[in-house]
Amino acid sequence: MKYFRKIMRCYFFTFVGLCRSIGMTAPKSNKKSRMSHIFSVIDGQELERQRLSRELHDGIGQSMVAIKMKLESLGYIPEPEIKPQLEGIRRQFDQIIDEIRRITTDLMPPVLEEFGLVIALFNLCEDTGKHSSVKIRFEHNVSTNDWNRKIQTYLYRIVQEALNNIIKHSNADQSFVKLMYDHDFIYLSIQDNGKGFRPHDTGREGGHGLHNMQERVKLLGGTLDLKTASGKGTLIQIKVPRF
Ligand SMILES: Nc1ncnc2c1ncn2[C@@H]1O[C@H](COP(=O)(O)OP(=O)(O)OP(=O)(O)O)[C@@H](O)[C@H]1O
Ligand SMILES: [Mg+2]
Image (cartoon, rainbow, N blue to C red; front, side):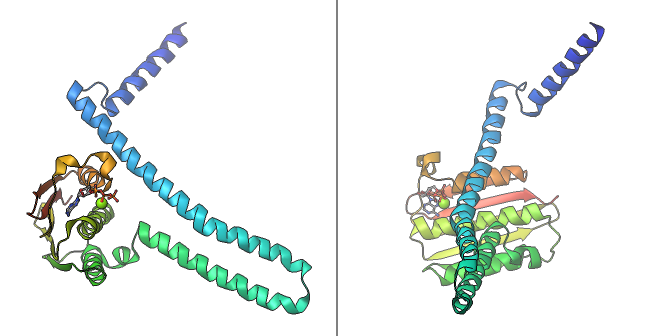
């Protein structure tokens, strides 16, 4: 009985600890917002997993099955026909390598890993500008490359989404990306001179981009300020602590 009580106490405290960690014992409004925060992060991760799973299944998975079938059939075909078959398989492998490169670049752009955020943003702005009718200017005062990887990846993803939104929705012809920092904070802003929108009209069913942006900033312990109005363009201002 003594041991049983001990075990129950142990379970009870673990349960209370768990509840605290997800905010179940916090005041009601706090609890609600923390729960919704946790769920939206999980939602975001789930969507990313689903996307990855689709890419792997439909792209690489299908090509690998085709290659396996071709390899299995090699034993049954006459010798002179083997060479072109092997050439086909080689070509298919090349395609798979390209596909893997595309998916991994999407997850973590190599330029970000190798050269850091500033060069990666410079390339992103230039590349996006070249493939659209929006002129994108990039300005920064950054002379360091030692921000942690999470900050760099999240800020990169935010700019990527903001630029995609500008191209998809804004009808802008000018956009301005600015990355500044001081001793304590990093300041990122993305502005366009497009048609603007009413942020409250954009429920979750409208898309995930803005919502994910906000989640990323929250996870970095920062703030996001969205200024936009019909016909007045859009300005996104982000401030995150450096450490
Ligand atoms: N720069 C912008 N200019 C004009 N409208 C914008 C801009 N950014 C966002 N919007 C509006 O806000 C909505 C929500 O944007 P959000 O990025 O969340 O979703 P989405 O781009 O529609 O879809 P997703 O990002 O999930 O592919 C857009 O559908 C668009 O109406
Ligand atoms: Mg979007």
